[in-house]
Amino acid sequence: MANSYFPNGCALLCGAVLSLLVCGCDKSTNRDTPAPIDSYIDELRRDVQQQGTAYNPTIACYVDLTRPDNTYRFFVLNLTQRKVLLQGICLNGLTDEQGRVRYSNEVNSNCSSRGLASIGERYRGAFGRAFRLYGLEPGTRNLRRRAVVLHSWAGVPARPTPEHPIQSQGCPTLNPLVLDTVAGFIAHSSRPILLRFN
Image 1 (cartoon, rainbow, N blue to C red):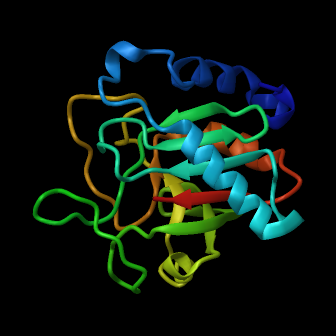
Image 2 (image 1 turned 135 degrees about the horizontal axis):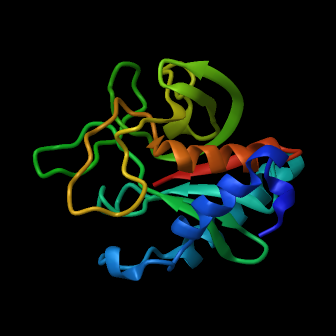
């Protein structure tokens, strides 16, 4: 992975985080079915093509909330080289009685959304550094109005775990070290980065 995607001051930290979180580095702790990375990449490549030249054509993110909540569900992908650059645990919004993720785009629903979004500007929120999300499809159009943002929380595990993490109020919430690395990709991208929720 090119170091040009990372701020100079965090290259060492990012390298350490990536050594723990890149795909396939610790199969012994991730006993679930491997993520369908190729299908994520194909879907994001179609998204980039449909959205035109406004977005980064090489780097994009995929959140697969159909996967178990204690395994990797957030992926930063290189669409050209067809590989995973980073993966992390990601919290979801409300679930139903069977523990399945509920999807809604309604204000105050506290649910996860499904569809395409772009990662917007950085700001400091209640949980520290965060990035606004802008919906690009009907299922994500209200992300901004709902204050659904990409942020971190210290209670999110860095790696797969037997325990199940708590739910968020609809925000895709990451481990702080994972968000630090994502922030490096965002900072060194000349165009906004797409993020697809499933």
